[in-house]
Amino acid sequence: METHVQRPSNQPYIAPVAAKRPDARILGRIGALEVRLAETRAEIETAQALRFKVFVEEMGARLPAEAMRQKRDFDTIDRYCDHLLVLDTTLEGAALEQIVGTYRLLRQDVAERHDGFYSQSEFDVADLVGRNRGKRFLELGRSCVLPAYRTRRTLEALWQGNWAYALDHGVDVMFGCASFPGDKPQAHALALSFLNQAAAADAEWMVRAVSGRGLSLDMMPVEAISPRAALSALPPLIKGYLRLGALVSSEAVIDRAFRTTDVLVVLPVKQISGRYINHYGADATRFAA
Image (cartoon, rainbow, N blue to C red; front, side):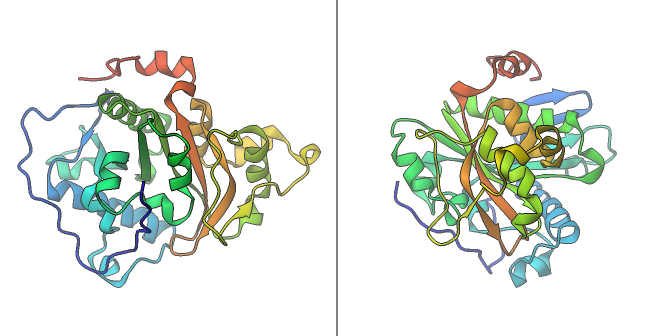
C-alpha cells in the first residue's frame, strides 16, 4: 500500500448528494436505537456537526478555520468513508434530529484508491498492512456519541453496526486510533502501562508510531500497576476494545489538534472473543432488522 499522509482540508466538505434509498439496510437495532450507514449529504453533515460538539465544544479540539466557521468536524478523508449512524427513533422529527452517535469506516481497498488511512499520519500503518498481505483491513475512527447516550447500549449498537459492516465486506482486521483525553501522557501512566503489559501486540500485529512521534507505553514497573485501578482509568471505548480481544501499539502519539494521547488498537477478527461473536451473531443478524 502506498502511504499518503492525510492533511486537513480548509475547503468546505461537499459530499455526493444521494436520495435516501427506501430499502437502506438497517445494520442493527437495540431497543429504540437503530444503526445504519448515512445515505445523504445532510446526514453526513449532521454527523460532522455531532463530532464538532463533542471534539471541539466539549474536548477543546482545534480544527482548521473553515471547519470552525461551519461548526462541523470534517476533513478530506470524509469524502471517501462510510459513516455509521446511531439513531434514537423515539426522538421527534426526521432522521436528522435522531442522530446521537457516529463512527467513520474506511476499507483498505477504498483507502488505497484515495489518500490512504487517517491513522497513518500518526502510526506506521503501511508496515502493519504490508506484513499482512492478503488480509483486508478496516479503519474505525471518529467514534462519537452525545453525552446523554454514553451507555453500554449505545456502544453495543455501534459495535453491532461495525460487526455487520465488517462481515458484509469480508474484513479480516479492524484497527484505528483510540484516544485518552489531554495531551499529557504522564497523566495516563497507569492505564498506558497496563495496556503495555496486558494487551501489547505481538510480532504479527505490532505497530509503531511514525518516526519522531512515538512515546513508550512502558511508564511504570509491573509491580506498581494495579489492574483494577488501571481498568477504571481506561476510556470506555478502549475498555470495550479490550473486551473484544484487541491489541495495542507499543507507542502512543500526542495529537495536538485534538488534545488527545492516541494509541493504535488492532483487532483481528479471528481474535474476537467467542462470547462476543455469540452475542452479536456469527452472521450479525441477532440485532439486525
